[in-house]
Image: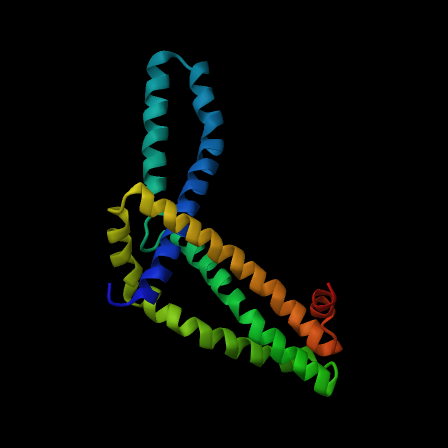
Length: 194
């Protein structure tokens, strides 16, 4: 792979997609369980027809939902991935908004909205180009399907770390916003004393 950044982003999206498919399978099993229990109430001949129809419907549902190009699992995975990636903007946003509040006081929220939108748009451009433009992730998904279990475990751990760091950066960005606005970094002062 020439572009390591693109590879990493697509691998994380692929693992999020696989997790979403597993979650959908789990929910599907819960939803279809009563229908499979109902087969015991029917005569054997009708029961076989009933199970065939349910299985056919389940296969069509799976093809529709789990299609990586335009299925709802991919839409949901893209949204989750976008949310996690956008959380990394909280650190600079928290710093900028905290300094604005410190300098000018609390401003109307409409003033902060363009700043937030511009920051997220700037950080989203590389992801859009490297992952979603012309369905580039499909090319990577085909390569990732051929990888072994060890590769999947490694990238699952990297994806969990990505998610954890994303949430941690959002919390730290909120902390920076309040710390800059108030003008005190009590956490850092406590760490220096200890």
